[in-house]
Every structure is written in C-alpha cells, then in structure tokens.
Length: 232
Image 1: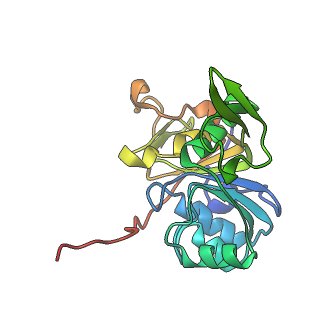
Image 2: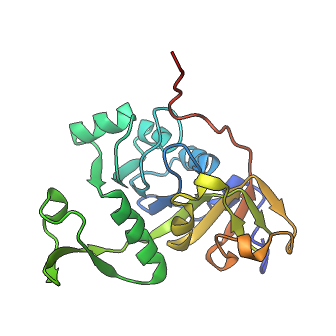
C-alpha cells in the first residue's frame, strides 16, 4: 500500500495496529453485508477487551458471534440480540457488558461521529430506560434526550466493488450500516468482492468516497442465510 493505492495483500496487513481494548465499528445487518473475513482475522489475532459497535452480534458460530466464543468482546453496543444464543447467555449472566440502543439512534450516533458532530437530540427513547442518565430538553413542546456520537479505533466494512483509491460501491441491501460505519473509524478497512482499476466505477454510483478508506482487500465470501424459511 503506497500513496493513493489503498490495496493490501493480506488480512494480517489489513488489520495491522489492532490491539487489546480498542473500539471496533462493524458494518452489516444480521448476516447481510458483514465483513466476515475481517472478523475472522480479529479472532485469529486473539485481541481481547474489545468494545464492538454493530447492529447485532452475528449468529452462533458465524460473524461477530465467533468473537463471543473466545470472550474477546468486553462490551457490545447494538440494537438487538437477535437469535444469537451465546450473546443472550453472556448478557443475562453479566459476563458481557451490553448497551442496547434503538436502531435509528445507533445509526445516527455513528453518522454524527463520522461528520464530526459530538452529540444530538432525539425524541427516541424519552421516558424509557434508554433515557436514564441522559440530558433531556424540550423543543416546541416535545421532549428530547441527548445522545453522544460514536467513533472507533477501527471500522470494518464489507463492500461489493472498490477501486485502488478506496472508492466503494455496495450491493443492494448490503449498504445497510456499512456506509456510515466507514466514515466513523480512525482506521477504516473495507473488504470487497472485486477490486477494479481507477476510472471503472461510475462516479455517481460510488457510495463511500476513498477519502474515508485507509485499506482495501479483496476476499471471498460464504454468504450464509441467517434464517432459512420454507413453505409448508
């Protein structure tokens, strides 16, 4: 990797500098658009005491769920537990610190972090346990609570295509949390299905400009189905 060329040749290089007790922002929703190989590299490195911010924590045995197996996550900031039995078990036992945050608020906290906005007011959560310990104000007769922005030491993201400069395109619903996560990391690493030459991506189709991206790596992906349903 040199100059404007953001490509790296290995997952070890992609996550160089990752150490214990860091905060990691992870894109994806369920198993859609998750940076599964970067997550596997985090597990391989064995770093511990992590704070992970993501919509959810994968499933048992895949995605972020594998980091729970080795007790690498100290705190999880997410919008729901989902069907991850180990996540539920560690939450209820007190082994894992969990901060459940309304989904839209979680997205806005990272968007604000990426935009350099330290905090914002939202009506979501007022009058519920979500508001406990937070500043509240009234605007135009409606109550709001103050939510602080989120940034991370690393942001790990899954894209579809990227060029050498780190411009990224996401495919369909895999956009989900990925574009906002990409803006809020001190170091943003994107794994993609295909890396193309500069100029091959239509500028109007680029979702994440390369200015936000530090490292790009091409990988192969399993693309599991989170919950398979069949007609009777």
